[in-house]
Image (cartoon, rainbow, N blue to C red; front, side, top):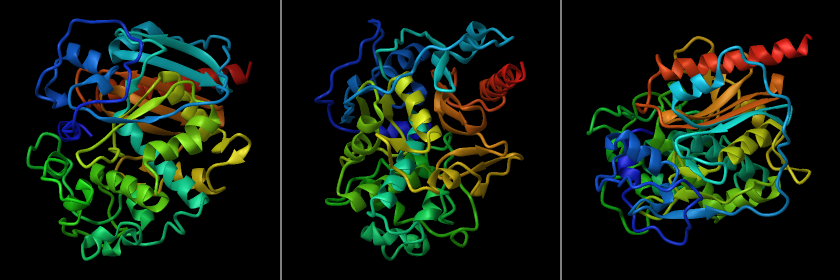
Length: 391
């Protein structure tokens, strides 16, 4: 998702969206909209007001109805200092919800509970959940259907042999380069091309890619394919992703605030990225998944969806970890949505645990530094919950 933002932000002027309540600042955003080259101060501002950045257009994911309650619970006993952890992570917000109760919640970096924060690749897990809803609603007949059934523009390309399931698990076998340091990589180039009339810009690019392995045989992380998933859902349902997410989750589950979803150059939500929501609503989405995908007493997702989506469908070359339907999985049964610069939703069904974090890491990714520290923090919270259970 890192360099993709340079392309993702090449849209027309923002409209129809009010800025969230935040602390005011005099920091000016640069004209160069590649987020990787913004200063840390500029990111602190932009991440909480992405819909106000020049040239950004968004759709609104409307909330409505009774708000899903997140009552305050007993403070969680963590031996390591949470304030110190948040400072080292540069967390703008951190919330721990366990057994449906808020065990910790704090904000920083000028961010407030009433505001939104951008998700980056956390949005991938929202997009995949909409596939489940579309299956439940009958818009998508089977995950084994070929992608071209729903995106005819891909016919005649390497995607002729690819199923919806293989898109979800990033095992299409279509060649892709997601090197964020290479300006000629696919992730840097695919949204920068000239749009073709009547065709989503992602489809225009992806249909040109060659095959490197048989479909289903090789996992490669591909932001472009999550964008294809979004196109597929919109094509199948006849609705924008924002409309469908509002209809299936945001309103019926009781999200507290409207969210916004950034649009790409051809007017479609950037489904591999770029939804902005409040910290509590990110936690509520985790609770929605933890509750089995039920909203207003009705199943939004097929009965077998979450067990499949949240368990390893493909190996990623890291012991104990894997990839499901756009979720990062752990062999202990926990799983997570993750985005660059410290965004995340961690879910542990065994412990009825949801941890949502918004942040602005010093760098987009740092798997051996703040990334590893976040994984260690998740384990420390799991340990604290386990200790309470045996008292």
